[in-house]
Image (tube, rainbow, N blue to C red; front, side, top):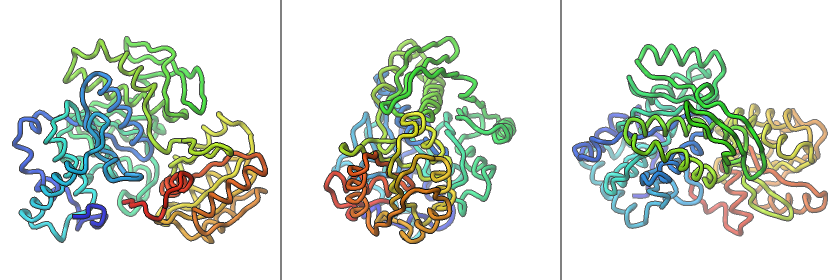
Length: 440
């Protein structure tokens, strides 16, 4: 079975399909003891999930980590103690999935993310890590990661996204994602606008959920911000950490770190209170070394080229704040393109209105889901304020042109606007074939 060739969505809501597939796992002692940590949100859930897993592993608790999407290999999605699932283990779990699909007569109904989640959980059940961290795919109410037991959930942020699935408003998105947390569970939330936070408090009260606002519970003081990350002082109850290095760059990663720390502390208190004394040192080691690809990552020198996976308006705003803080008004070249199924104008308008130091804008498209270059150019022209605009029909041509212009004009380069665009740009620069990448 080629997992990435399955249809993206199954036939209608898939929670019952996932429950049926996992039925033969649920009788094991490991599954009955499972209390997965789950991460949802519009932005930041991947880096937050990775931070959570890194802290747990620094506490000598081997952790199963399930994230999405993969960037270069499917195996990136499923890790235990930092190691990607092997080809042999992936074949074993896929064969199990094929058998379960036949037994449950789901050949014509199953969606890809449902299958991916089942494969990941089967792999974890075979190896029985001490903890499991699951990143939701879309939303929470109907997300396959809702099926396995898990009373500790993080909600990192809210933005309008996946409108046909999650609803037209931020309130709709909030309601969908908050439902990943079970009744009576613990929900750790990142910074939210006051109106959304009030709505979430009401939601939590109705369902007996213990709501922890990381903004209040983990106050942060920024000491230093560089392209190599940030240095902060923080408080969390009686715990104080000074000169804490967070390797992922940007103020938004400080907020994600606060969510991760609070979620891990709560889970440890419930399951491993004996590890709480070691928690501060483990957190310090983990956050200083954690990596999450595509978070303002420098992928080339001479000229300096950075890629970022921001692909929502809120993600674009976070990136702009980081750029202005790190680079000031240093002029740069923006390589941009947006997936055809994303909010093209809201994303590009945020970039072009928020960045006063654009020298050149290079419009292009990713091989995977890229909107036509002419469409990108039309939206750029609506918001451009004096930058030179260039078009290139392919990402390969765009990166060659960007290198030439940046060297000639002494600019640095940012590739942003689409996740697939950023990944394909990095693949091009390291000599690979971006068209050969298999995304989902």
